[in-house]
Length: 496
Image (tube, rainbow, N blue to C red; front, side, top):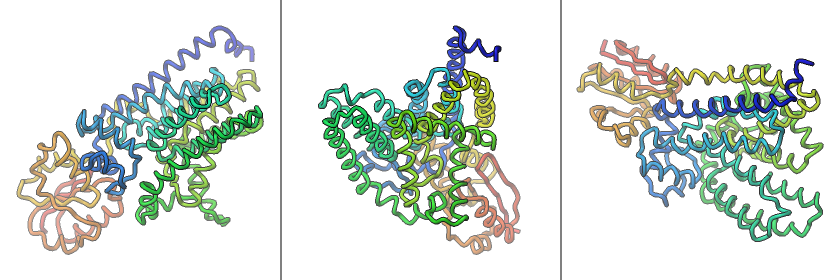
């Protein structure tokens, strides 16, 4: 214990500054390097870009094509960036990258509003090095901007004092902030529910009931805007048969059967593992800190408890009634709140243990960062559906008169790289490729082929579907060559 006394002297700030500098530098560099790796767009990214390319700004207010779902302001910003910088990978991923980088700084400022600077580095480190945050900082989807908007809403809630701000100024500020948030992020409504109750609690705590009409008027504006957004854009999408079927495994179940609650437990545990580690020890430690943070806030700071916990409750309720999916990427907006609660739990233990907990926290952060396995980004290419590598293989190994077939889920990337991408001319000779549908009869197709043919698969196809198709092909044709790089697979068959 005596060895830990240095944590309370003047060296503490220097150590904290060094730690924060490492965290900021690491988080910043990892995001930039991951973006610069310039991975091929995967299927969902490609389909977002196809919408941007094919539609004007007014048409982006309508439900999107290709089973895509994104808020209009996000799409408009993406459209502006693409119009200026082009439709290549780096350009269409630039806005999420900027949100990811800015999030590091706003999250640090936000953490300081809830806990001591002595533990801020712990939740900030989890955020800086977590793979899910790095990945979606360089992905053409709205999930990192969602998390950034969450942080901004919480920051403004803490900074804009209802008791001190003038009525008109408060109304205008929150009308503008909430309007931008609602039309930029589908999940903003959950955060605003917490913001509204946070302000309501401050009114009741101070007995300044004359402020209630102001808060109610703001809340009505939020509700009206979200209702418009919901019925114009969201409702036609979330009630589609495709979306309901696809996301069915990611809804929570109401029933009290052991099977359903085992499903709910596994779903929530999966989210926790993405939040702060992939091992039993990491999950247990993060859950302990999270539980302490929630309990501490409820006992001592109920307004902040409402601000941070109510969005979680609203999201879980929406998942129970099948209005919101708990796929990790759609829940990313909530992770900053959970990390704040983890930090509050860590701060509570710091106080109770007279700083002794800080050394185990350092060890826990080092172990968790190792579990995230994000440092190899600095020296290893993190490829996904690298379909262009498959295209290059075909160009080098297959004569131009030979047949090329695209599996159903390889078609979007094919459309993008042969019609939209700035280097589309490179693959013009592949325009002869034929597109297979889900119901294409491979048996009939393979028996009718009398020359060498090439089949392209990507990860979205699914291993089982790919294996089933290649098994049928191998019954009637001879496999003479293959190409497997990352999640792109090419099979070359010849007649037997």
